[in-house]
Amino acid sequence: DKTTKNEFLEYANVHNKAYYGVFQKPVIDALRENKIILREVDYQGFLSIRDVIPKKNLKTLFILPPSEEILIARIKSRAPISDLELKQRLKSIKKEVEVAKQCDLAIELVDEDIDKSYLVFEKSIFKLVK
Image 1: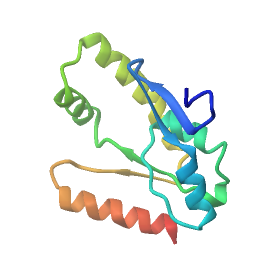
Image 2 (image 1 turned 60 degrees about the vertical axis):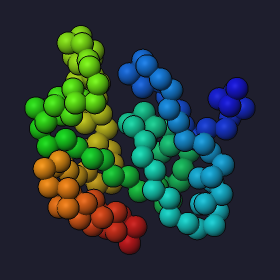
Image 3 (image 1 turned 30 degrees about the horizontal axis):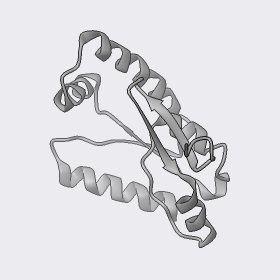
């Protein structure tokens, strides 16, 4: 089992459905070579990684939903979801938004304007890696 062999930089059970994680070796190898790594992780991954990667090597960006209504629409558009599961997800998201305050930068991206969202995201990345 890769978890017991300590092969993951971080891993977590997300929404009590599945495990997700980031393998440790590619990240550590890239850091040793002074490369910039861009990884998407959920808030649990962020909480784990920040305890492992030195702050000087870690820049964090949190992508916030523009509103709760848009967030609910995004969640429902992915797959069918029960009212109870949606309620649990929204409760979890409130915790995630609190974690955003611990990140270097938090931004909102709006689905309706993908070009603008891309530019905001790109600008944010460049701001972090300066």
